[in-house]
Image (cartoon, rainbow, N blue to C red; front, top):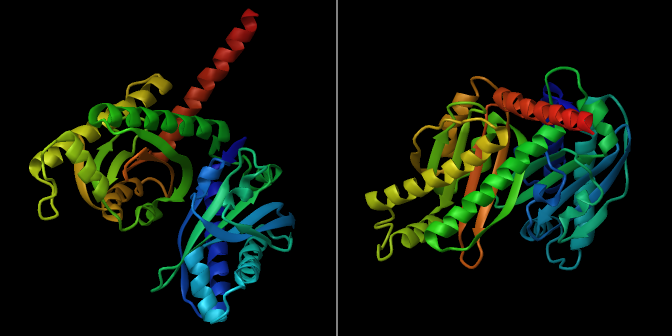
Length: 389
């Protein structure tokens, strides 16, 4: 399926506006001021598009002008906070409360999409979901999922809204009218990231003895300006590498500070690490060298898949909040594009509290070009093989 990039951008903006309407309805109901933090379009249809966390929520089926389903999910603590506001002292009404919250928020969200599409969208009564938001994807097939995070101002509360149209809806919603990218090409991008992340995990294990696995990977389409917000205010230690040839952009390999301590300890046995909260020069060099090896192995995998050579810059050491690390990269990418396909993976240790986040922020036009070339080569090879039969 070919997807028009401009239409995908417009749909992402509409998902954001719909989430803002949903947040507004929630604020009117609870007097809790809310705002939409990040809206991204997940490319894969599997459950990795939703964080695997315990939550409750509702799934609402859509019919009429837009067929599919939407889900509103709430962490348990968010429901408790809303319950304290709306029904203080009532302990046994979480399901009915969540149904009502979902119903109210769906009204704003779906109305926004109906206005955008110039149609009427019918909604079903909400189905309560406890602990398994992946119900949203149980019969999806290579679709895009529009996902927004909604936060409460001055409150540690968050909510999520997801929209998954039926497969047949995409021709109308995102059909081929201009600059396009195919879902098949994006699947290749996803597979390349998964394969590269697996190689990176193997290298971490080989160098440190820490057994690791690739737990979460997905590709998403997100406004460039929202990338720093997506990385948030967590402090990371790691490296940033620029791709100096196609597909361009940047690769970030980032450890949270606890994981950086574990890594530096494994690389430098006997070193106390993080004296007075700061990495020593030796520790910085060790993590920078590890990051360089990890990034090189990751990019070599890409180069092999694309049958090309990818030149990279020397790694730049980073120790800062995720948003601060991403800001200058976004400023550079934002000169040429408003949206980006972002691929991210989480590498986790099997037996220790250890996380490594790997982000790929490619140049959109260069990525489309190299993936299209890869797809064209594959098509040509299939035709050649067919002719030999």
